[in-house]
Length: 516
Length: 78
Image 1: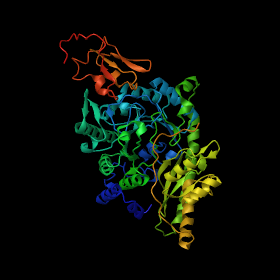
Image 2: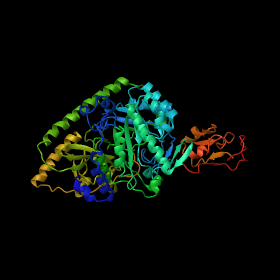
Image 3: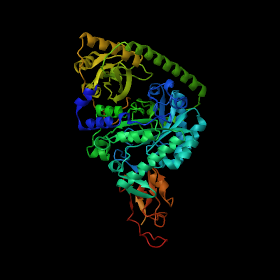
């Protein structure tokens, strides 16, 4: 997307965000700690080796790793110590767990068994996180017992947790003790004036504190907790929910505040808000951002700090690669019946094969990138990709649950996000409504790369101005996208194609519907 | 008067269990239940009943008016 496209969108929010960007180019802070200086899509060459070691197979901390490695969450922590307006505790948290499906709560013993069962079935599962469904640090006994048991049974699995930060300073030593080396804090504001519109109350020192005072305490605790993580060399990711009209412009300041305190990665997520979630925001009609608004804010904050754009806002009991959820294979009933033998050697061998695959992918991209060096063009555009993982275009259009979005320019192919879509293919025939949903979700893209696509959707996509591309089936994503872009630029220059700007796209609300 | 939990509203999140100073709350089936014999409304411990303050669903931990008035042994209730 070009600057022109951004300005053309012309919403006041977008204009204000861009104004903020101009005010502090690059959200500037120095990456003195060595943390803020490396791209989340970066490889070992431009990253501190100690940090590379920590993130290289963590799908949430490395965009590149998320194509290859899987994570799982265990729902051992149901209690929470704050209330958020985007969360309704009668269901799972609407934002950081997908709404609509109630998690199965696990004991630490059940959780450990589940982790071993998943690790044996999915050898690329390298990360175990505790993310709720409440707040892990509001359930410290269950959370740390789980970490302790898993660390003992499967020491090669990385441990991480996700917290609202209120209790974080109190548990920092325990976090370090159990070798939890990745912590995510959800920070939606650093100004209590704004915070009071996001958090109705916190439970603090045996009282319910509301309004400005609640947000002030929460913010102080979050930032103190972040500083303490940085002091101990524990990687910190910051999650922020983008709430148009409430904190969208302010998140640029949040970005600056967390970067200066040593956060490794900032993940700005769209608000998920619909009346059926029963959240305060859902009921009062608060909207989420459009795809273009979200991308503009992420671009604005992408100075020296990494922005995470591959977050799937997954459930507190998710299992699998990001973007897939295999939790239904591992219900408590099923895992209790499973005979589990932890095969550390087999996992290692599998992961070594994955590493070779990654190297091949990076090499392919590098070669293709060199061909771009000879081209001078200001064109910048988005394309959508249907993939099941491994960094390859290997999904049929009709089977895709989501599309990955890449921004193409002479600088190469850059991953900038993903779009969830309803399953379009149901019972062997497409449904028009779902195709419409997909077109809305990738409406800002010039092309969609697929392994295979039927004649009807092909014609409809073409009519909508999105070129369906199946010529690169089962090839590497970035290499293919760069090759296509090179041809596209040549066609535009030859006058065969007239380049036009695309419009905005919709971020899909509501729960992911799992295919049976 | 002790507190009780409205089972239909309880999310089973367990937040109240850990906060209760009297260990009066336990999981029974798919909900949490307050033992009226142990509940002191937190009088003598805290300014406000802890289960009420921490519960994520309003009007879920409520005074149980069906039971005879609870005689707090620690003097007057606030």
